Image 1 (cartoon, rainbow, N blue to C red):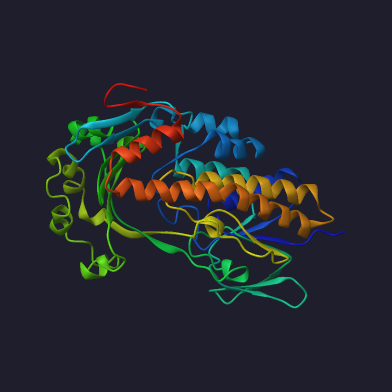
Image 2: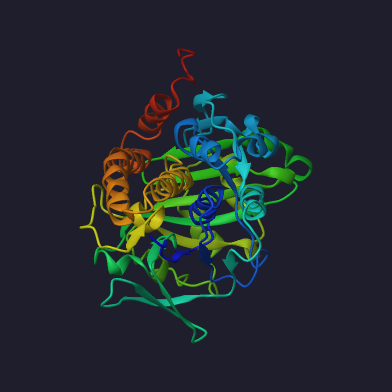
Length: 386
């Protein structure tokens, strides 16, 4: 049988790794990406790549050695503090080396053949056709018809409505993000506070998260457990109206001045506000021939737990493998992939939701510390016990 044309919507880690795995097996695909080119925007912070998910996927794609060359194992460390700045929990090695998002994306882009990615193709809508194919309608007016459509287009996927009407739900957490460049030279005390990897300052309903990136940059997030309309009430519901700095600092009354300096010092021009959403835990859909989803499009989770990119890449590796193994019964292969993905991701989604609630619950930061120790398989608490 002639293989159907394969379209992947979204050039994130999942979409790119899927194209790479298909290519390894001699199968062509096209990745449609809304950004104009690879350098259209910055790629944010770091990914910690888990051994049983992301690292496994990179091995399938033949990219593990290149990943180890680019990764920063020392950035795997985690520190959890209470609002007074006292250390509650620390772990320096969980086998999850970090990699700069930019480096990961460049590695994946370099691994696929020229012409695989169609840049500047923003998907407006996707429609099912009577013959079982899908029609893609792009913002530039172009249209494409494809045999197998794979949505790797994130939280607000334009492909998802073809398989389910369920949409992501607000987790209760709103993030205000900043960037602190050149932290080692400009703010050595804060650099020490953050450590080599990630730091979580946590109290009920509030958090300050800092993550060390390459090049002496630290990304900071003020995490607030607030109603969904809180940003609008604060006149900061879009990029043109940044949240008032003092209003934000007022949310951290009684916190250590050292911790609040992480949100006091950054340049306001770098401020980004966003709400965190997640798909309902256990969500699944009835199989639709010729269409499927991977990554956040399929199972968007809270970022607490660090599973998003890892699961997206594992989805990609497993879907690519079943497509390659069953060219004459592709629909049954995709169905088997979906059933396994649902089974595999449900407990991880439940864990991420639990960590999110525990992070900001009445027992914060101790509940987060216990959850982190269980997930990472070790570490030391303030008592010095393992």
